[in-house]
Length: 336
Ligand code: TYM
Image (cartoon, rainbow, N blue to C red):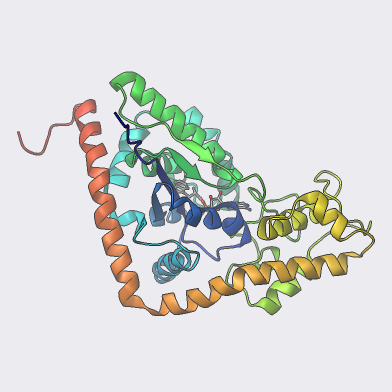
């Protein structure tokens, strides 16, 4: 008898905060589209995570639509993937609470993102910021996710998700699929243009990152100004040449060229030629996305349709997991 293998499930999310940059694109977003062909994919705009730091409400609402438009401009197809706002599916918050009761303070205290964000927002180290990884675990576990495409900085959160899922399963049987991170070989950690020892970050000043929606002239200017070194040698050596290595990773990620081929291509040439080639390649990658973005973001009826139908379908899948979880932990059903 022929066995039909069930398609695996992919889940990922991005926070609708600030300007999405080349790190978000190379580390995560550009990997989302190709997965649609082989897997059941859900891509969320994680607005509840965003409010762990203070947001301007009007800007947050705009950023959510902006991010959904970017998802679509980067090739996500609502016929193939579920695209929705996290806060539109209440089960995310519900499961997050339950998972909080199966996670230890010590585990959450060790999270690097919590430590970083507590430093950046010392005036607002709230409980949500601390419990953030359990909301992320809920996002993933609700859909019985197999694979989570993310950049390197989210690996620790996925390891925690796995630990919590395994702990829950060991008490109640196989309730959750234990997910795996899916992290690209090149570009999983794109570094800041002004300090190549720090990762590129939305919350840093504008000139340290290339925004996906930056004008080509701005992209060129930012790449030209990127910190390198005085050796005038295009060579991949993260320890001694972090700036050049970062630009090489970006170039490799968008052109598909290997590091040794890039070294050969720019042998004997200065950083000026190399940087121009990096800027050209990044512009060639981003310009078509920017053009699609302009069209899509103007079509409010279409965005509305994608948003509501995504949430409706996601809620149905989430409800199946929630009913199992509620039963296992001993919460009474709504109908006796
Ligand atoms: P966020 O919104 O900070 O980032 C979105 C994605 O971009 C990746 N990324 C990077 N990749 C390479 N280089 C960089 N400099 C860089 N900066 C960011 C991130 O790894 C991420 O994949 N907690 C998540 C959002 C989230 C989530 C989830 C992700 C919430 N729930 C469930 C996966 C599954 C976050 O803050 O990503």
